[in-house]
Length: 135
Image 1 (cartoon, rainbow, N blue to C red):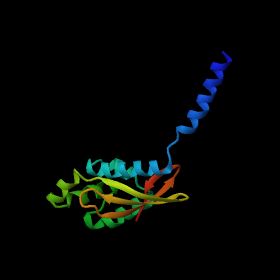
Image 2: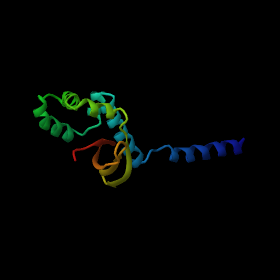
Image 3: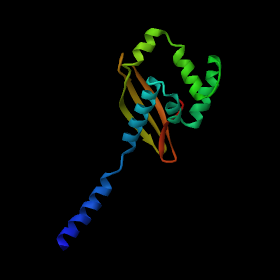
Image 4: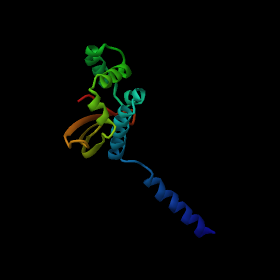
């Protein structure tokens, strides 16, 4: 009986240390969720993955698209794309090639699946959650 309890306690201790997700995993997840939300036209979800600073920058830049809040700007930006570009978005995927975390900020180097172009995305951890920040 004592041996069973000891083994159970040991498993709880071991498993409790294995349950966490690394910053790199969280960063990959938020990038995936953000880009997938754009492709799916789920602009509420996409905006929820942005920092307040990134939303303000987007809204300010979006004045040329008729203005509005984050969701409206993203929708207008997507609507303004040529049909051929919109069609390509369905197959768009970003592979995270490298992540550099410095405290509560990170930079992820991404490779775009359609033509292999690389881009850098900046992220910021707010309230324990990684969000896409302005570039």
